Image (cartoon, rainbow, N blue to C red; front, side):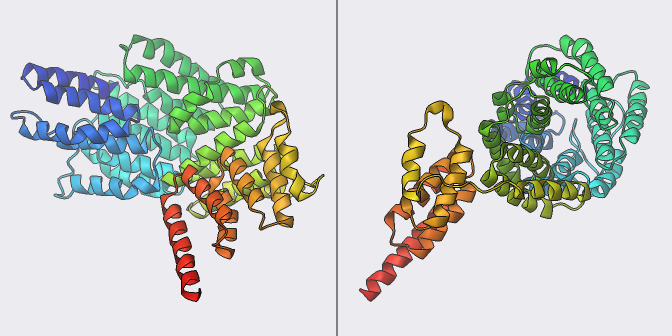
Length: 483
């Protein structure tokens, strides 16, 4: 595509002029961004900037290099609200002089557009349209940024429930590019795939993916861009095939065969929702087992999206997690997911469709009956520990332990067990609410404090640990005063 052609050509020119280290940085930074390797990007950026400033007789490249750590955050890592201030500041710095400068081959609006889309694509449609209109004045057909903005514009139209206009826009912009004697890049096809999927033209979208795979990616040299494109094709194909299986248009086993492994989705946050949407359809057709492991994975991923401020994807994933948890009868997991979904909904500007879905899903979760103890609370843990490995279901255990805690809320052994099962289900942030209640009631209860500390440490909740230390220190001081 245009970006990688520019990167390769510029690197060759820099090497020919003797700027070997700068050439390597020009190539490496976008590849690291594509991999979501923020650690290396942040580590290498200072030296890359020093080399760029020291190079004489070369294009202005500092802002090009600064672009990529932020691009990794709002792209592969799916950052939303936590990246907004940085995205706005970066674009503001580029345009501070009123020149409309954009570093080759990227535009200062790209990362801000991605950030808006991550937070709430439909809710920021007007902001995105205005930003796109302004940014379009500073790019020309054939430039890499032109193609990126065309894709961002199509994505905005899809989010604004105008997928047919998105297809027309992609066609028109592609024609402008071809009029320059070049062609659009591989990623352009993914814009069509998304629009066609929202038009319920899933088979046509599959045909686009096949064309990309056979006529685009196959011709690329080995490397990060090719690997990324192959990955995106596989995940998109899995989602499309799963929906076609759900509607009876493709065999369910065929759809299951193309589903990527969960560990691959785990490694690529921007693709997780695609995987989850596929899995929900495959659960419905009976080829994927809906068990607590899926629940724990979805909880972990929704927590991540909440943490980075990608509120609409968080709500969309939470709704799927909620429907699956309700189908499993996992009451505590379902009700906890309702709370997370409601927090995400509160952050959205435009969410009438999702609000209705949440109301329906919440009503379903409320109908899950509470667990009934078959033994006395003090006997429960002995019974659960005696279960065979193939019988263990942490979601059922959590519901039973909660039922026991309702009868014995100050039982620190039950509190510790609740923490353990909650951590297994990736719900440590919910568990601590119950454990904190006991610690605040009885700060001298060392077992309760240790159970809470273990949960906080497992969840890497540094502020929570500090708060616990302050709570226990204050209680100890007060006790000493009255002793």
